[in-house]
Length: 177
Length: 129
Image (tube, rainbow over all chains, first blue to last red; front, side, top):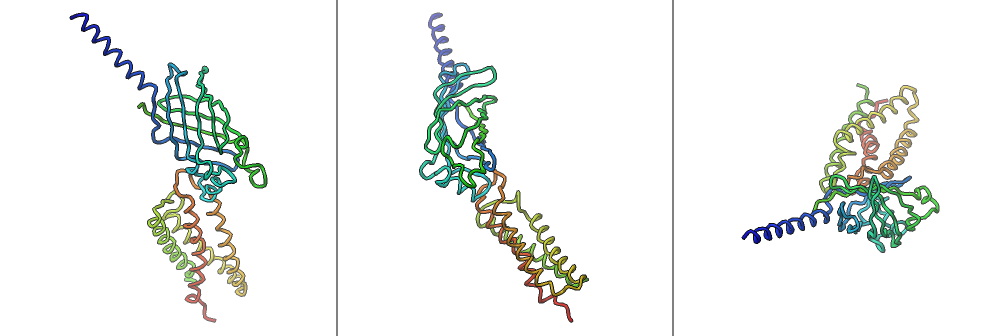
């Protein structure tokens, strides 16, 4: 009888720990996420994103990020700029409707986490390492990209007014699944 | 009360009425909310000020005995009205405001209301010579 109780308890503990482990690594993107971009003469947000997040602070090697941003959800605050941004001169949203990121590798420094993965913008894929933090169930990342690496716009004529380096400020609040 | 000043006040009030009516109709028909930028207070205030500014231009010419220049002043007012539409075309609205592409359609017509109403009322405020 005593042995049966011990086995039952051990089984329960194992079962509960499995749930705890599962809850700590699978995350769902909540409302209020924010993807801001800013550069000289170019500022705005992307309003729509989807993604799958697996992240465990105690075992970051098992983590996985997969994000998809809807290019047509761009908002610069100016309707004509929005239309221009999704045109073939910039993001070419009809042919490349989404910006995607797939993680490959995670690491940790003293202050923050680093995720290395493939960022696809305008149909061009480049490997990038993005520093981020995870505080109060929110992923926060601030980094820069060169728009010319992804052939977003060019440097001819008035396009030259937009800086090549574009700062990104990403906040993704999450809830455990 | 000076007839030109009265003209400006009446034109300003009617401009405010027209602009506020247009604002409310536009927002309710198109289900947009630009109240952070344009609301009853800001539109009403700007309309009355614009009516008074046009009247001030006329008053200055009357004081200078340059009544013949009123045609030139009218052309200047029309030119300024056209130039002022660059504002709503180039403005970047706060990013939380949806449908920024519908903002020029709201703001641009309003830029012509002051001149249109002031000139339209002119026959009612002609001075007897």
